[in-house]
Length: 525
Image (tube, rainbow, N blue to C red; front, top):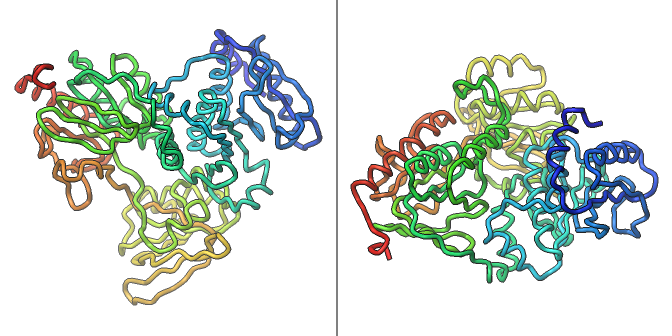
């Protein structure tokens, strides 16, 4: 099942395995079991330290198409139910590497927080092999398992277990259960998982602090194209640089096709995010990933408060936190996220095969979503608030050529209606006639643009009514020594290439500021 190229790559990855890993497979009959055994045996051939064992696990595994990882003969708490191919193949590779002794690339504070969990935690992560957001969650909880023996995690392929999908009313992935209860649904990252754990178990922050950083010259908040560009430019100046990000790659990781990054004819978001990370790793930059900034104190020396409880003191600050999906803000939206309301057509589209769905928004993202979904679902209805679509004409023409795409213009969404825990219809109003109408459907994909991630800067720097950070031509905000760049700012045209340039510009401006405003460490103290 694995190509020669993949096997050769795996042999390189597995060359330094320290512990023996066994794939323990539950015995029994299942139509997918032979495929699973073949897959695992193929994988095991890349290293003498990997073996496959079939045995009755006395209820430890869900079914004959489930397997767990055993380290030197002892199960370590990581399980897969289904065949982790597609987007989840990397999740299996990383689980093997980390279980076999490869060091986790996690901040010491984060490790301390997870290690301090005393209660037994059992995660169940429902995924689709076509979901590009799911591996982030799977890999996060699997890393939690390798840190703390009180934690276990099972990855469940919804395509192999449709009865569980039906039983648990799951309509979106990833969906995470913790100790039998819904813990998280939809796109979620490690920082959000940590936030939820800290809310549920406040004590996990105790004894988790790493050694305090010395005074930084530049601290960059945000790990997308703008933030990475800013951090690299600052590091090249020989400055002390720290980057804080809930996830490296930012919004780029959710973009599947990129064809307008000059000099690169075509790439994907995950590929670009990996390239950004690799470039960042070439420099001495302190990285604080998977943490949020809760607040910023201005002054000659700025103090940044992290969700871990840590504080970073810095001479200059560059805000590059990007934006997130904008919500409709209508009744029935938040209540049904993961149960018929979604924001990622690539991830959740397969769950609506043969069904009727709506896309809210007639811009490029909305029409692109409609085109993506049209090949999967029975029908797509696009709802656009304005009298005309905002998408590029080439996309509009493609949408009009599809028999199963209907476009409604000059309408406003009033509410999303649900019954028995699932979306059943959408209520909307014709803005010209003011007539209120209803359309029966099974899912709603919201594609109405982005909202700046600037809440933690409110009251610190000037923001527009839309939440964008106001900057000048040098990236300087209203507060001396605080700069901003990328999608979080007032700079028009939210594009990757523009964000990279703005990041470089903000960093160079911060360097100029430091030259003109020298503050010694003693003065800072």
